[in-house]
Structure formats: structure tokens, C-alpha cells
Image (tube, rainbow, N blue to C red; front, side, top):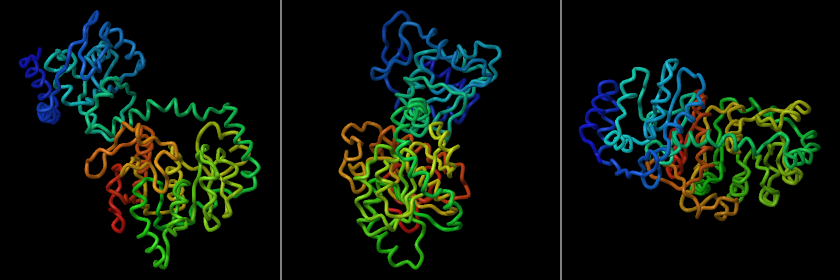
Length: 432
């Protein structure tokens, strides 16, 4: 049963130490959800069927969670659960700081009206704030799984960063250094890799230029006609770099990239090579289908990404390294930066299924994305939710981290329909 006196007392405690947070929590009171009680040996609270903690032994659960931090003196916790984990962490006299990041303000207010959290709220070692106020994760951290599921919409950026890190081990396993299938693919590509040129030859060859980097998000189609006309009429073209799945769409529109980058081991030659490519240089990685490479008529350049799988080959055949946080778009952007571009406009970098499509120039589902099963979402520049996938959201997070680390480069967005990309500004010529 809601205890308004308990709520008022705990909000008062918060207000004395964190007045900004108190204002945020007060604003959230209009949307406070109704929590239900779940019976068990101990019992717990739930929202929409999601339990905030174990219903049998939340203290044992919290102790297991606290073990992840070891002897760390300063720790960060995303989500409060039922409140057991903050108490367990603070039970250690060696603990100097516990930063607690609230993932859902309204849910936290509801919790304060039902469960006394004063024991840890008044501890001077505690720092309390809303996760949505942060751009990046603190460390070392732990996220309470139910709080992640129940994260408020405003915390979507941090939600996706947390999910990205939680998935990191699974993603790394997909490129295990001893995977026979991957080693076989590298062996197939090795003869071509040996004879082709080094991507490092391209570094520094476009200093001071502007670059257009083309991904294959649906919003790319919004620009094709204007791009083709303006590039045809301009005396000097900006540097044009495309990802592999955008190449076909661009060429059919009369736009010939200077460079196309490919790295996806699942992409076949039938989907990339049948379209005109003799005017475009190819940058490829060791896992690329050898038929894509052999079928390319333009110049071919080889590159690595920083993963253990490539280390033996890198030692044998040194080549330039491009950053790739899971997406070929990352490598294309890094190439533009390493070539010296000072301004980069991103086309089709939607990280979302804009307009009910998965990719520009392809039928929905043709490249493996299942639009009908898409339950994840990101927000666009207008603050509207757009259907996406956890993979796309992870790629967005990685790109935002990359951009944040390169303040000397100006990044422009070209679409208001795709995901909002932090630290980009609207392209003055193409933004729609």
C-alpha cells in the first residue's frame, strides 16, 4: 500500500543532497506506475510482470551481484531493484563511493512510496542521479536486469549502451581466433590479400576535403536525385565513400563512389558485383567473400580491424587498420577520417527501419533484417520512436563514441527520420 508519508520523507532526504534530482522526481510523479506484490519466501514488487528482484531471497541475489565488483572502492549501479544491492555494497567499510543511476524516475518514485530506502539514501558515500543525464557509462558498473527492461524512454541512449556492453562477449565469440570456418575464409582470401594494395596508401590523400559517407538506411533514397544532380554539376566532388550494400543503389542512381568498403562475411558477390564497379576502388577485409574481390574491376585495397582473429595474418602481411565497431559503416567513416576529411556528411545512417523499410534499394528482409519482428526502438531528431534492432542500436552507440573522440572533425546528419546521432549537426545542403 502506498505510504505518502514515507514518500515525502525520502524525497526530503533526496532534496537536501540532490535538489536537481528532487525536481526531476517531482516531475515524474504524474506518471508513477502501480506496482504489484509478488508472493514468495520474501516477496517482491513487480511492474507489468517484471519483478524488481528475486521474490525468494533478494539479499542472496544482491550478494551475488556485489561479487562482480570485487574489492573496487568506487562502483556504479544502474537501477535500484528492491534496494538490496545498494545496502550490500555499502556494508563494506572499504567502499568509498557508490554511484546509483536511476533508469526510470517514475518507477523509483513508486518504490519510494512502498519501501524504505533511507539506510542507503543518507549514506554520504552514495551519489544518486538519473541515468538519462549521462552520455556515457561509468565504471565499474552493474545493471539490475529488471531496471534495464523497465528503463524510461528518456534513458534510451544509456539503455542501448548498457545492452551493447552486455552483448560484447557474445559478439566477440562470433570472431573466435580458432573458428575453423573463419580460418578457412581467411585462407581463401589470403592469395588475393597478398597481391592487393594496402589501405594505408589512401591515408592522408584527402586532407581538408569534405566527405560523403553512404550507408544503406532507407533515408538514402530521399537524397539520390538531388545528389546525382549536384555531383554532376559540381566542379569538384567531395570524397564519396559507400558501404557495400549501398553501392548498387548509388550506381543505379548515377552516383559512382570513389571507394566502396566491404567486410561482412555473409555478403555474397551476387549482391555486390553485378553492378558497375570499375570506377570505384574497393576496400575489403580478410573475411570478405573471395568472389566479391575477384569480381571487382576497380583498384582493390586490403585492411584489417582490431580483432585477435586477424593478428597472425597482420604479422605476416602488414596492412592498414580501420576501426570497426561491428558495422561496415564504422570502417567507412574511419577511412574518411584517416584520409584527412574535415567534414563528413552521413547519408542513410539511420540505424532504424525508417518508413517501414530495412534498407534503401533492397526489399525488406532481403539482407536478413526482419522488420516484422523488430521490437526495439530508437528516437529520431523529432523525439519520435522509430523501430530498430538491438544490433542497429549498438552500432549507433559505437559511432557516437567514435564521434565524441574526434572533436576536430565536423559530422553532419542528413535525415531527421533516422536515429538521432549525438554530436552531429544538420547538413546545411541536404538535411531533410
